[in-house]
Length: 151
Image (tube, rainbow, N blue to C red):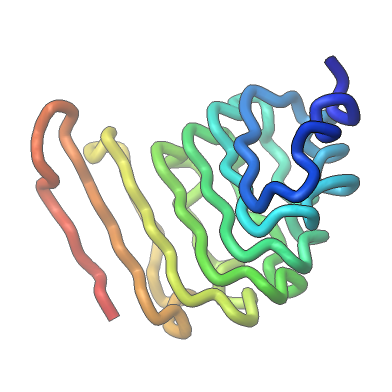
């Protein structure tokens, strides 16, 4: 089923879960349908490496990423409505958070990882405008071992 056919079932829905897309499908979805939603949850999009299409989103308020293989964040300066981002188990994506400083209205960022020994953030300095930053580092089958960065 094509993306266009699938989207016929999502008219009037505020949140969409997007999973297992290839790069071309991801770019097409963002360009043609992305701003129809308040929240987009990207789940297991391991074939998506280039997230630059996300810079086109002007109306989306929340983006959630789980197991996404993108290695660089996108230009967030045009994401005018973006208030929150959650990044989970997407360690390559979060190493450099520099682009986050340009998101005009970003209020909160949640970073979550079950591979805590490989979880690394270069610097949180770009997030100084963010009102709420949560980091959860969790061992599988255990309670959180670290939780921090509240401001």
